[in-house]
Image (tube, rainbow, N blue to C red):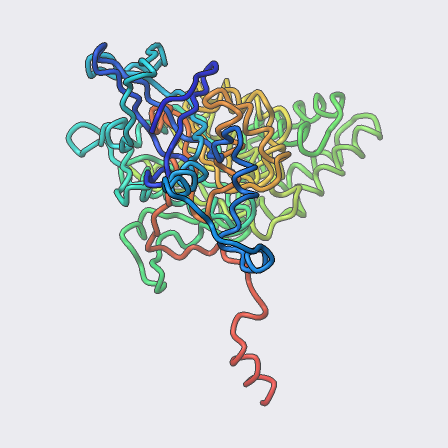
Length: 496
């Protein structure tokens, strides 16, 4: 390999046919005299367009029998130039991005070095030379999967601590698989996790592929609304309930002020129940329009099936979180809930988390939100990135629609797990992330195989790395139900 040219942060290298280089590989351009080198990553490959190459390709008819048959005569090549020409024709131009440099063996996260072009030596380097491998003694190792050298990639799970993460890719590429891997890694190191499960994909994380209990069985707690998850008004608290009424059910400000008075009245009577709330609204002296607005929201809460007046049927979210304090996951199963119910539940859970974190009943919580734009209100996006992050809510968004996440969130993201996207419009929002340049994302992501992921951010020390995500011995529950799954089975059922 030979260094050709450098333009800004882009380096072009000439590679010959006998040299094995793939997109995503790292190369070191070494200058032995100055004891420095440039670390670059291959983001694209092209043919080296040498002057006269098109003419040579047109002249060279070898390999096309129809053209050879129409041309009389024989090739005369006394100096055996043809072999050299063919070798040059197959030369490639590697488009690379500068990732770091080294000086006297020390890695520097900027590309300050400029090796001499005439005698620079270029070699492949492994990811293990760039990333220190964490161990149980010096960190919290998490095995992500396999990298190009058929080696395992272990990263430090502490890179997720205090971080904002995004997992994105088109449908069927394995987004939920990565989310489950991160969840189980956090649990195994004693972290508490809350999962907002939109499609019921995480409810069997405690079972292996055969449906038997696995090592995480006692640490996975599934809360299904209306079944083992109901709330009393007393648990809800006025602040959280007003957020639901105003932000989810769009209660006008005048009615909200009247509701606050009703609440304090019931609180003084020690009668904070759904039944008493209905009676209080019915008998309250207020404008008829205000009463109608309150009754409308009251019946929405009543018919949601999420509330109960029986403390024995109610589930304490505080107690559930206490059970996962030393490592575990609470899975909030939103699969069969209406849009309104999802908004109510998420508002309640997030409100409770902030309440527990501000009083230090919880140190921190890792929140996984699948397709959050379907149930998270508009104002919460900024809250999660700024305010809630300071409280100790560390969020991972999972989506196949990257444009549903705001640009300012991409700019503040700490870790990005990107699976395959074909459409360039899908890649535009991702390429705005501050952790990587747009060229890298658009070039590499387009060619990713299923279950292969481009990992960016703190978790890989800002070195973009392609990883084949490892398999998990858990029931995935994310597979699409197919009709034409087993042809023989269908034929037999038709015969019957």
